[in-house]
Length: 317
Image 1 (cartoon, helix red, strand yellow):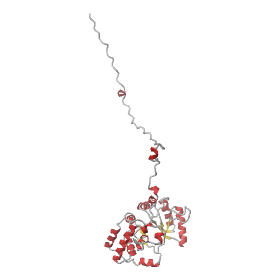
Image 2 (cartoon, rainbow, N blue to C red):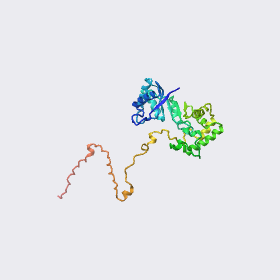
Image 3 (cartoon, one colour):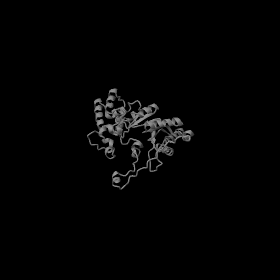
Image 4 (cartoon, helix red, strand yellow):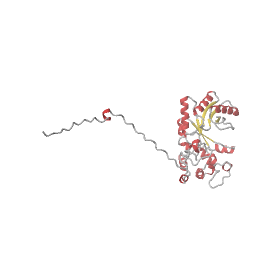
């Protein structure tokens, strides 16, 4: 058994009880050890990147926990490819403990990590623990196109991906494929998630023993190249159909202020037209003239005029 837990999320209203700072990491690990009633944690994971804390500080604190014996290995989750490379470079440069695992979102409907995350993880020898291989329950067959979804997660929680017609249309094609193969849709989805060579394991989230037994029943299923090609025709490799609402996108995508330029304080044209606001014209910038180099003295002065000789007057003798 491998005991793994995470840190990052807020636990109360205190602003210091969240994030990936050194102070909170040390306090969070003590809480986890006390609640789990254990002396060490096998895998301690950063739940999400913290834009307010430098990765240098985070890796330094995690390295101290490994050296103290409270944590055996450290991992990351929901990181972009560039952030993984930066963390690996920082660990190598500073001699810190590097991230051994990455936990991204991966399913038949969400295949974006095939472009960058999985190749980067394979390059650095990281284990990839993909979560939500059933796309948050969309690939269980309970959510179908043209049917009312009165499930608690699709109505009261306001999750839009359960009502995304693009995802539901792809589910209908996958249901037909599973029926043609004579397997359950959940088995097809779980087997696909672990068929990629860069995936180490898939995290299943059953809520009942019946769901757990149903998931384990499809462990021995293997997909042929023909079946994988038909799945690629439904959802192209490296692409995603829509997105789950709970997937972390980062502040660069979530915060509108980081994606838009600040508005210019220019009055409307109709106010300028009626003379309410006068348009201030900027003064033209002075032209910069290149200074001329002084020339030799003979070229800066006119030559002296040679006096003419007096005219000769002739007289008659």
